[in-house]
Image 1 (cartoon, rainbow, N blue to C red):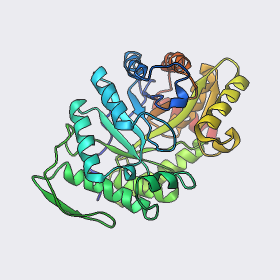
Image 2 (image 1 turned 120 degrees about the horizontal axis):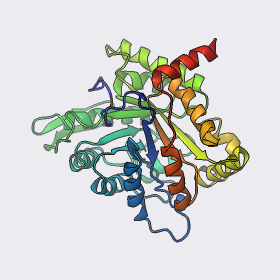
Image 3 (image 1 turned 180 degrees about the vertical axis):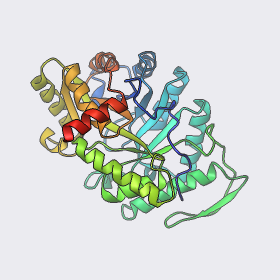
Length: 344
């Protein structure tokens, strides 16, 4: 089923022309709060992000670590904010019953006034098998299950009355009428991941692409593949919103920043930074260093940057929240010119 909209509607964030189309990930993991923190302070974090001018706030999703559940966090944030976009980065739909999840998503979109965008994924090999097992869902066929779930959601959000659904994995003969989201057709749904199959599926079926490649050249070639797939599916090359997930830390001393990110990687993934940085974008340093690193991805085509803060206590997270909000990324056109001149 082709994607149902041309681009994301998180507050029309299709370009970085104003230099600050930044999102921030809420530190919902217990390891990110620090000792003695009241988890309800995460709501204040969301409010402060909105006041600082962030375009969006995001919540992750996992059963591998103690975290505040995604929809619960976003619902609390929605009630305390007015304008900021809300997103999942990234939701694993297989961890929830698909029809019930559609109802929860539509409800959240309604109660937030249509501010929701979902990034979804199928999990990570050698890690997410445990999540699938406790959710009582088979690991095999996870990509078909993901695409089926998204297609089911879109059908439920547009159906007039009871309906049925029969896909490659999911089969429902009778589904009662579901509540509709605020956004016609439902919230935009982005896909995480940068494997060749993910690039193809993002272009054919999804409204946005949110990867975290460690090199901007990989982002550029990946985005080109997404756009080719979109055109091949009869969609516009601009049908998929290009976004970027980046773990960032602003510090005066880059070496101290790298040590902090190493601790963050170990606490978050139980993996050394040397492994994590071959998979994900991690950047630490003074504001100009972080800006330059992110600008290279803007030059490669990214139009929204979702920043995860690489700090392990809420006070540091809040300090970083303010520092990152002051970053001014290059306008898309200027960044593209810079990229082209560097490439030559």
